[in-house]
Length: 602
Image 1: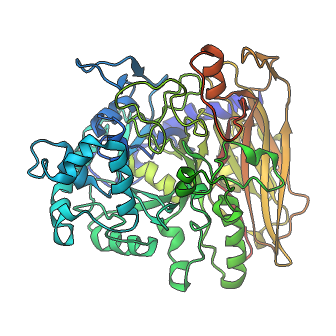
Image 2 (image 1 turned 90 degrees about the vertical axis):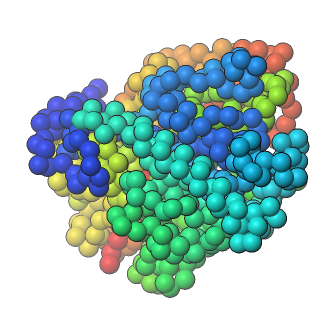
Image 3 (image 1 turned 30 degrees about the vertical axis):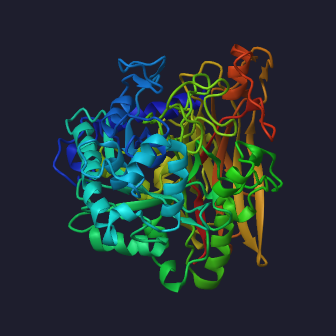
C-alpha cells in the first residue's frame, strides 16, 4: 500500500501549478487546465497503419486515419471482412481511450496505393493497378519487394513524378486527420501527432524500419521515403533539408528483432554526434515481438514473445534460424558502452517505448482476451474470416508507449519523448516510475513528497547522471498493475544493469522485489491467490564504481496469465485448429520496460 500515496501525488499538490510554469507550446492552443509539475502518465500508440498503407490495404483494411483517431478516442469500429451494407461480424472497441496516438502509414507507395484504389485516379485502369486489385496477395509481395530494393514501378514515370504527385493526397489526408482530432481546448483530452513510417530494409528482408513523429503541424511537403533516402543517414539529412521553419521531428527504429543484426551497425565519426539526437528512442515491443534481448542470453525472461525467425525473408522461406544477439536492444546498449570507452560518445542511449504496429487502424488494441489480429505481415481478412486464429500465432496484440509529461499537449509529450522520460509496456497500462540518485533513503516509499524528492535529489528514467559526483548509487522505483485488470498482480521488479569492466560487458539481473503469490489454472485461466497490486522499493548498488560507465533499466513483471492464442483455444477448441512449426507458450508474463538511466564518468 506504500505506493498509493506516491501515485496520489499525480492529482494533489502539483495540480495547483500556475499557468506561468507550463511548458512552452510550439503552436497556438489553449493552455491545459491540468498541468502537473511532477508529471502525469499518458498512454499512447505511435505505430498505426490504415488503408493508406500497401500491406494493410491488400489485406482488406478500408479504415482511414480519421477512423484510427476515432478508435483511439474510444469509438467502436467494424473490422473486415465486410457485408454489402458495410457492417461486419467483427467489432472492436478500446476498454479505455488512449491519451495520444500517431497514424504512421508507410511513406513508400502512398501514391501507388491511391492510384490503384481510387476510381477517380487517372491511373486506375493501368495494367499494374488491374493486377493489384485482382491478385492482392501476389501484388503485395511483388510491389513491396521492389520498394524494399529501392526500385519504383514503371507507372510512376521518370523520377517517380506521377506517384509522388498522387502521394500528396493521402499525405494531406494524414495531416488533416491529425489536426482535426488534436484537442486544442483546455480539456486536453487527446493528442494526435503527424507521422509516418520509413520502410527501410537491406537484402530485401532485413528490417530497418523507422517511424518519424513530428512535434506540430509544420511538416515536409511529402514524407521522406526509403526510395528518397535509402539509409538512415540519408533519411536524417533529407529530413533536415525539408523539415524547416519550426519543424521538429524524432526518428524511432522498431523491430530490431527482425533486422538480422543490421539495425545497430556502428555509426561513423560524423554520425556519433547526432545519432542520439535524431533517434532518442526505440520501440522495444510491438505486434511482431519483443526486441529486448536474445534467446541465448542467460536470462529466462528473454523468451517472452520471441519470433522464431531472424527477418521477413526468413519468415516466408520457413527459415527458423534464431535472430542473432546483435538484433536486440540490450546488445545495442552494451555496444554503446564500448563505443563510449573509445570515443567519449555513446550513440545507442535509447529510451524505450512500445506500440502496436496495427494494420487494422486500431491503435491501442492490446487486449489478450479479445485480440482480433493486427494484420501487416500476418493474416488477411479481405474476403472471409479464416478458420483458425485471427493472426499468425507467433504474433501478439502489441504494446503501448507511456510518457511522463506535464500535460497532454503535443509540446509536453514531444519533449518527454526527446528527454526519454518514457517507457514501454507489452499491452497493459502499468504505472512505473524510476529514479537514480546518490543516497535515496528507504523511507522514501512512505513519504508523501517522494516524487518531488526524487526529482530534487536524482534523475528520472531516460536521463544520465555524472558518476564522479556520486559516492553511492541508489535507485528509487514504483510500479502499479493495470487498474482495469482485476486478476493482474505484480510478481517482481528487476533491475537490469550493464557495465563495462576490463573491456568486457557484464550484465546483471537483480530481483529487487519478488512476490510469487499467485498460481494460474491451465484449463480456465483463472488466477488463484492474491498478489501485489503495487510495489515500491529503494535499492543500493553494492557494486557501484564511480569510475565506470553503466546503464540501469527496470523490467516490471506481472504474474502469469494466458496468452491470447491459449484463451481462444480454450473458449472455442473446434475453431482453434492452427498448426505451427514452432511451439507457442500457453502462458505469458506481461511486463513494462523503463528507459535506462546512464551512469557516465566523463
